[in-house]
Image (cartoon, rainbow over all chains, first blue to last red):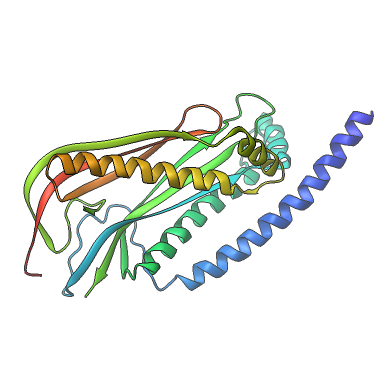
Length: 151
Length: 108
């Protein structure tokens, strides 16, 4: 009985802290995305780039992010995967990691004064996949693309 | 050394093909940092140590690829790709590969 009460207390505390952290992170991401909206990042499949402007500099830019999945999310997704369906709690972790990586890539591109990023690719991996029950997965994401600077 | 992840270098012309180059590295943080990250992971949020780990390993892999390309006498690497894999707990592998070429600046 005490075990169950303790588990519920721990879960509710982690839920509160985790949701505050997540909310703040989403707020920060939204602010940064608006800030960098003028720097276009063209996605997958843009293999050639031709423009009338003189090209001054070409280089690769990367952004990386590592976001952990908290205990409450893992508990809920374990319960939910028994019945199947959308695991919304884990979706948001992946979403945060990818957006954070793209924002950091744009940050670096802006620092070197690039005008456009083309052929953006996103590479992701999970550390500590949930083979063991007490392991919490962590999502590592690298976003990279070719930054082009005009004269 | 010019790196791009598209098939050409904008503003340049490929004059010679040098070959396939690659570089890989497996890195991990120390046990204390792993423990810290594990505690941080319990409540969720960003794991700064692992972000640093990822950046360091990406730098190292790219550096190795570049040194291989320099040995072949190339001055650019095109079609660079990064691949990641998790080996064991707390260790990340980053593999960078591309095609080493010699390029020449064109008019526009």
